[in-house]
Amino acid sequence: MTQKLMGSVVTVLEAPNLVANPSAAVEGDPGWPANWFHTLDGVAWATQGHADERALRLNPVNEMSDWRCEVVPVTGGKQYRHRVYVKGMGSQKTILALRWFSDDNGQNWISEEWMWLVDSYVDWTLQDAVWTAPLNARSADMMFRAFEVTTADLYGDDFYMGEIA
Image 1 (tube, rainbow, N blue to C red):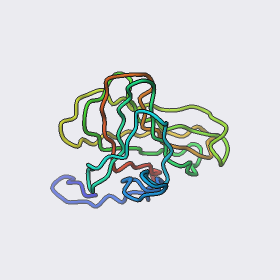
Image 2 (image 1 turned 30 degrees about the horizontal axis):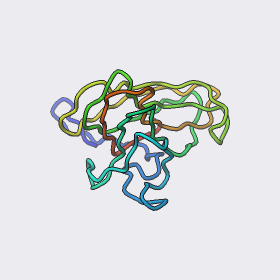
Image 3 (image 1 turned 90 degrees about the vertical axis):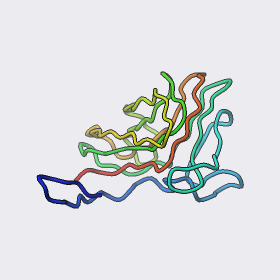
Image 4 (image 1 turned 120 degrees about the horizontal axis):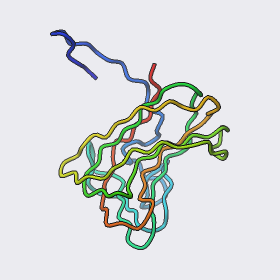
């Protein structure tokens, strides 16, 4: 990434992405992306993406729906950036959540941070936030979620979670 600073171009190094298969382009089980877990209803592995031909879709009709990446290791007290490109119609019930756990396997939930995805996104739009991991955090996951039934029809792609140095 480059940024212009007082007339000079500066290269900003970004930490490696902790999310496996962040563009959802790699197939795992037939018809579903690798490294992502999902509810049974209200989700789809879409054939339109931001940087390639695939994305994750939330379209909850009868119940909540979500996509969740595999658990990744984190260091308590460190800052983490998480982001996603979204397109479509969000709602007051759609979020990108960063969930913190006190163990290595994502079993002992501590807390979570929510990035609200409430707007109408005509084109792919970057949504981005920075959070500090709780001191006792050892792992985290990211959840693209409609937490209640809603009229949202939202696509997410190019997910990122990385430590800020």
